[in-house]
Length: 215
Ligand code: C5P
Image (cartoon, rainbow, N blue to C red; front, side):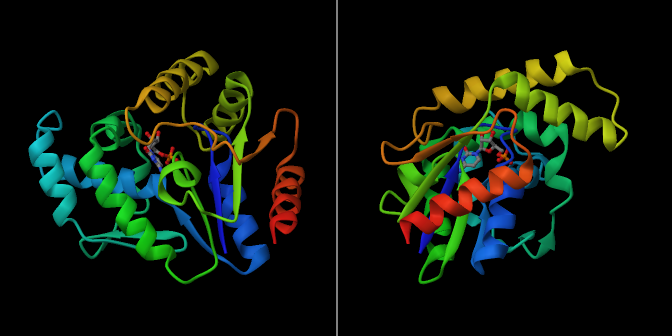
């Protein structure tokens, strides 16, 4: 069974998808980590990110492997390095070209092949797994998402204001929604869960209920 969870940045998809996968005994795939890993690797290699041809060729030859919480790029664990603000602000160079999306889409389908999996991202229910048995679109207002993100950053000791977080998030929302291929949108058959004011446990239970209804 394939469960897709799509939604905007900061909607809590990763942690909810991971918890739901554990409860169901399913595998879990964070496809944002794949886009992040390619972005990080290309930056490390000093590739001109505006040079689409070089970037496509880098992505096609990069070896990614995913095991629940850990992502390896060409044999190195890059799970931590891919989460920096520098990587986040450059992801659009990797997420925009249709050729790179095609390459990562094929890898995502290969990972999901023949297993029960919860896979989260922006295009999982629309482009990558249009026939998934259960599609969820997890979302919250921009202010709520920014508030949660700001709290997380403060807890980890990062100095930033709510306005800075909201501005960066709005920019990413815009890029994710306007992308030509694989843009962020709910699949017509997705169950939309609006999480404003809900605690993480309540969101998890709502997702689990939705999945069980699809079984
Ligand atoms: O989910 P996360 O914030 O880690 O994703 C990072 C970025 O990767 C997103 O903002 C989006 O631009 C891109 N992405 C994508 N398609 C996916 C997953 C992520 O384009 N399936």
